[in-house]
Amino acid sequence: ALKYYLNYRNNLAMLTKNLSSDNWLGLLLWKMVLDGISALNFFIGGKPFVLFHVLKAHFDFWKRYKYWKAERIKIKKTLPDSALFSESIVWQYFIKKKRTYGAMVDS
Image 1 (tube, one colour):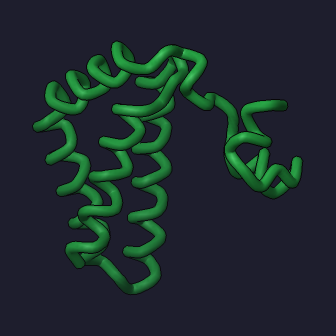
Image 2: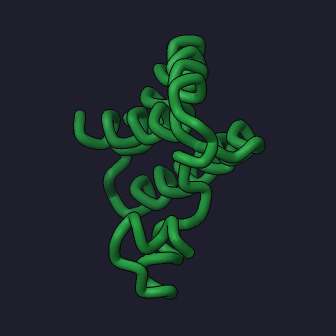
């Protein structure tokens, strides 16, 4: 059960810290909508406890939002924009068949 909580919370934190898009907050909110759909799917599928853990993860994420935002600012200061990969890794890997980070960046 803790696995679900940590997975959802840490995913939101990771996105907040690392998304390179100027629309990162919109993407984060969209991720939260998708998390809600996922939680409902677990609920319907007979795992209602997952819904509780997803909600707890989201509330706890927002409690520490200032911390995650500060981490984002620190990362943005230390890395040049060129160091951030803003494309879909899934698209690059499965569709374009680029298997390494170097191959993805060179495209």
